[in-house]
Amino acid sequence: MGKSRFHWLCFPFLKLSSNFWRCPLSKRSLIIASVCVVYLFFVVSQVGYSQQHRGRRIDKGKNRHARGLYHLETNGALPDSADLQTGASFVFPTRSNVVYITLKSKRLKPAHIRGTIRPKLRRKVRRNKTDNPSFTQNKLGTLERDTGQIKHSFLPRTSWKETGDVDYKSLDIAQKSHEDAETDSQISSIRIYSQMVPPWFSAQDVKTMRFLADAKVLRMREVSCGDNPSLLIFEGETNVPPVNQKHTKKINVCGGQCGVIHSPVDNTEVFAFHLDRVLGLNRTLPAVSRKFSFLHDGLSCPVVSWDASLYPEGLAAGWATVRMTWGEYQSSLKQRCWHKNIIPKPDSGCSTIHHYEWSKLALFDFLLQIHNRLDGGCCGFRPRLEDECVELGLHAGCGDQNHMQLENIIHRGHDNRHLVFANNKGFFDRNEDNLDFRLLEGIKELPEQAVSVMRSRKLREKLLQSLFLDQTYWESQGGRQGIDKLIDVIERRARVLLTYINAHGIKVITMNM
Image 1 (cartoon, rainbow, N blue to C red):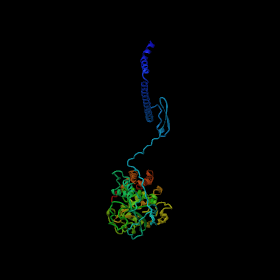
Image 2: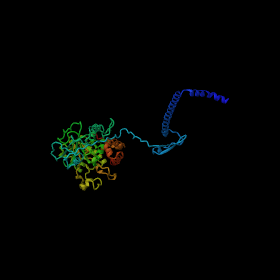
Image 3: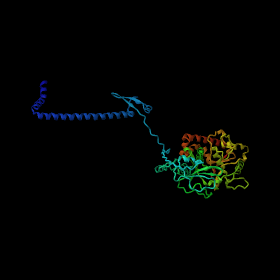
Image 4: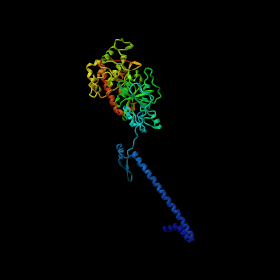
């Protein structure tokens, strides 16, 4: 039966083949060629499909293994997070083979901290060279090397010593392109990123700080002022109208808004300004830290706002100061001069300064240990051999303290009741066992607002918030770590002062005047 079924199945094929061989040769060749073409087309299509399918399978396998780094769920097969960051190689078991996967550490983007430092832009500096250098013998001599081009302005010379004057209207400090200038105008080193500023700063303080930190320098002058050290003054580009010199003689130094550049070693000027505002004294001139590529090798320098009213008789006469000795100063403290606006008697020995001003000055100078005003001879502490009072021989006069002159007791020409705290050379390296308590001698009252800040234990918080605004100063002191060290010193001295207040029964009163 099986043999008959086989013949029945093969009969059509045998019949077809017998018919095929009976056909003419040409027709048989055409049929064979057609079958070959069909077979070739079928083979090519099958090979292409298999390769494409295999490629898809490989891609899926790669994706599956990549996802397996974070989504494979095995019993103890996944490496811990510490190993994932090291870039080591691991073996993951699969159903039929072993897959080796090399993990690379993922590069994380820095965290975005709101309201902190903004990225800096690299400034392009182009310098022009000339064959006519002509400015030497003063602080601006380094301008020859850095800019190579200096032009004297044609302002008339003043009656005091000959001054150096550089015109920057045609010589831009950085020689920046127009695009760089537009970009820099949008980025300030004064970090105020919201409408709210610390309440101890006035609107004028903020404007002045921005000017000192960001204004384009148009002109720079080195001027002599009497017996005091010469001043390096720059005039900046601003929309502020010229300074009102109603109460002063005409001083041909600053036609608009200017700043005084100090040496990098005088960096306490900036800290003193912020401490003054935080304590609510408001007696210092606004100051910021700024870098000039043509001065002091690009180090940050304190820049203090120029105030012409401090020179009512002209620069040749120097500051408007109060001349008095230590003995006269102690006598005026006992007289409580100008207290409650009572005019003192002519023979009382009172100066023009209000009684409360001395209390504010003593507190401020003690925290910063500024001795060049009330203790120029360093009689209240142990000075070092390199201190100026020792080098100049002033310390030897401490045996006759009553006749020692006070220095830098400054006021404005039109306001001789209030002091201006200028030339604030403080010392942070003086230990608590060597503080100058002579600065507090004769003081019976202290300002309530300043003492309340020290007692509230918010002095550090406010100083950090305030100093953070000046990015250049913040970075020049080593960032948060360096600023914290400075504030540590002030906090320790504040605790000593509070103890002194309690031990000596000093009154803490409101001094709004």
